[in-house]
Amino acid sequence: MAADFSQLLSVPLDSIKKPPILPAGDYPGIIKQYELGDANKNKTPYIRFNLVPTDWAVTTEDTWLDSEGASHSKSDVDLSKRQFRRDYFLTQDALWRLTDLMKGCGLELAGKQIQDVLPELIGCQVLIEIQQYLSEKSGEFGNQVGKVVGV
Picture 1 (tube, rainbow, N blue to C red):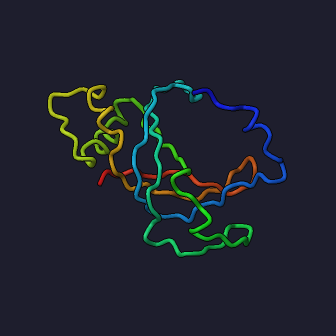
Picture 2 (cartoon, one colour):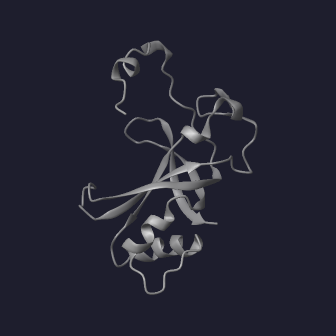
């Protein structure tokens, strides 16, 4: 089914708000999908995993203040609509990170190739380390993913 662009483009501009920055912590989540790419500036091939939190980090309070002092509440945020990504570079020095993730997800690796196991990662439960950072370009805070660990 094609997207209804007329409906999507008719949203009043003054109703659009930036989603709140999530507090840092280890969020339970799942691997939703992956894609292969080499679009970084060095053209290093990578696997990008799209990750969706399924619950809050145990350290997250019911309400929190963002970097600008605005108050946010867990009930105001639909985590299922928040999507994060983590790239794993396909170089000899970095492949161990990918195999650690696969092992942590309980996948059998013996005698298999990366391409055999990748589809098995879809839907795997993981802990997503969500960090906060300050963008040097925009001067705004944002979220980024640190480690991803299979559970």
